Image 1 (tube, rainbow, N blue to C red):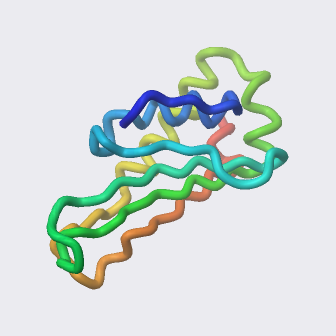
Image 2: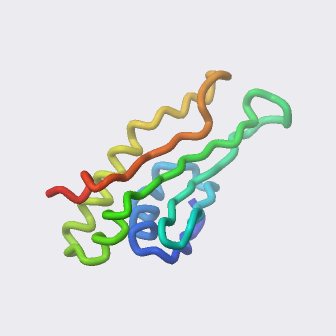
Length: 117
């Protein structure tokens, strides 16, 4: 993934925690409204244009308002646990590059359950 330049603390920390799960050329962006930002990771598989191998892929991480509000006030250890929980959710994503019917846009809802100890 390319260097991460995100304004919101939780998005920045989570993106850095996920950095090794995505291709090295993946782009990371903060999307959405300022009051409820989301994290978007995108990349393109290789191949020739108009060929099944040339597909844009993306993961949209949507954060619950409680997570965005409470995360900055957590201890360093609690923040690490939140990032690890999002990382675990990300490991379950299925990027089946060989399946022409595979969904190339996946959504991860990060709800307040990640705040639980």
